[in-house]
Length: 369
Image (cartoon, rainbow, N blue to C red):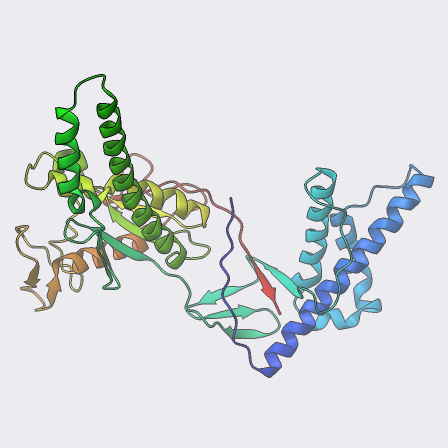
């Protein structure tokens, strides 16, 4: 599944005029190619020696005549007419596969747009560079990487300083859960009252699970939508927690299981892939809390009871969770995935984290006017 991320542009008057002109070129090329496709298809019915129409042939045909017949096309990016014809070819593929209706001519003023392939644009924070136009401001800053530190007092602490509290549904409903459990144990086996008590207890367990699941889905969906680097695929850095070992601590076991750390990681990973991003998982022994995010100094010991500490090297004062989240973000940014293979593969790794696998997709920008 591919999900688009829409970011509104903020062009000036001259840029808005250029964008509208590029959208008009794309619309003309699409309609020209559709009319030519229909003409060539009808001609082939009379003469089977003629080749079948295709988007690749139509693009070559347009390139051969546009300088003489349509010189105004040269004023905008070449992607505008070329991508429009490619989209026509995809529309015919969907039609022949039974997934869509026969392609229709585009009308002016209805979904005016043009597309750019991934090698024809560049992004820089809150602006995009479009060929033949230059830099255009965006109304929203480009999504970037983020570090997520999971905890018990708060479900997640982000490198931006945001703290997301957990719902802790098991703790909130523990009293009622204990009462229903005691009531069930007192009912006679095989009785109707035991069946009713068992049903009430099951419904409460389902409610607890649903509250936890809803909170995790809202958090993971928000993170994967807000934080990812377009074209790079790196967005979210988290720790590889040893949950099985953590729950052996009888003082924290109930609170840890109430958070659902494993389910949060599972949701993050598949949702990040859906949106073209990636979750980078730090090594289990990565000292995210004990390392100064400013200078890199590492403490020998940092007890769990210490929630704030001062770096002895640079003097920076750190909140334990925020500092860990910033280190996870830096780790995610420094980890890279190449087209030839993943970093961390091979006999020897250079970093302390191996990024999770993600499919590399060719991206493009669809500019709507």
